Length: 168
Ligand code: HEC
Figure 1 (tube, protein in one colour):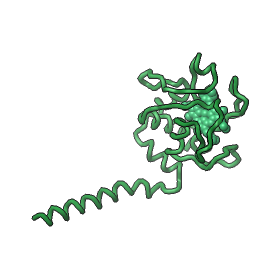
Figure 2 (cartoon, rainbow, N blue to C red):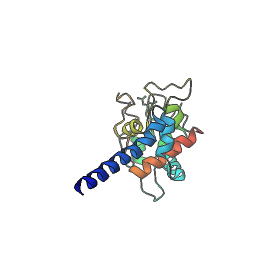
Figure 3 (tube, protein in one colour):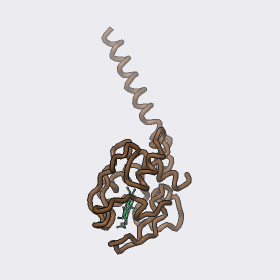
Figure 4 (cartoon, rainbow, N blue to C red):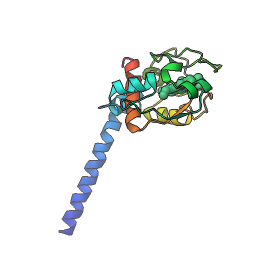
């Protein structure tokens, strides 16, 4: 009886591992495919609002720290510096460098000729970049790029919008 129970538990554990492993296996090495899986069920409209205005659909401000003084005083969001379409190429006020493209395809290294300096981003390294202002290789970014603290739902919605901006 006890052995039966043990086999049952072992079978469940193996099945669980298989199920957990499957999405990873389908997207291994492809940050875009991984991001699409990650964003299943996301609210892209919410992500667009975060990207353009810095608020989620519940009208809660996405917390941030750092960045230029005007951002602290007047608010703003990704679009203020990376442009509404995510293509970058802007020199934000009080910053002395041009912003990079942040649509997900550009971040994931799937667009030729983009001026991204680091390794391709993944869903995980992008979140670290937002929270710690460090690029995909861990290098500290210019202080013009604020640190952002979206919750899990907001981060997923924002990622869905970055995917949408890349048309992938
Ligand atoms: C005040 C201007 C400003 C705002 C607002 C801003 N960024 Fe940035 N961001 C920058 C600058 C400047 C850089 C380049 C930093 C560097 O190269 O050291 C950057 C870099 C990045 C990078 C790294 C890209 C790469 O090629 O390595 C990502 C990702 C990014 N921003 C995403 C976002 C997102 C998402 C938001 C909104 C939640 C946002 N940024 C808001 C200015 C801004």
